[in-house]
Length: 89
Image (cartoon, rainbow, N blue to C red):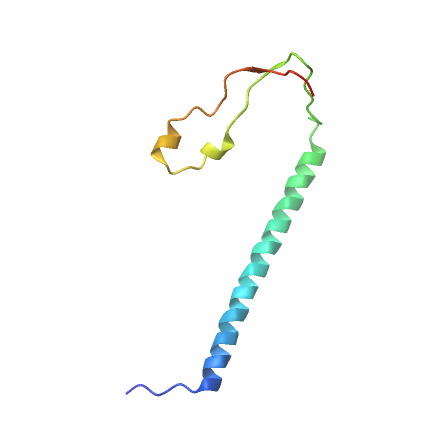
């Protein structure tokens, strides 16, 4: 036979479950902040600097949104655009 659960026990359990959800969200935010700090350090330490293009330069655009797609029709699309010429800033 299953014992009936009282209303206070239900409230305690719901509060516990909500606290676990909040702890998980806080852990995700903390991890994201750590990863961003590591990324920022690498960017600041790199020697590449800012990339600027002059009028008339040829460039290609890379579609990185296709890197992690699961749609079959997207996997066949080209990731690089045709060459484009910079017209102005």
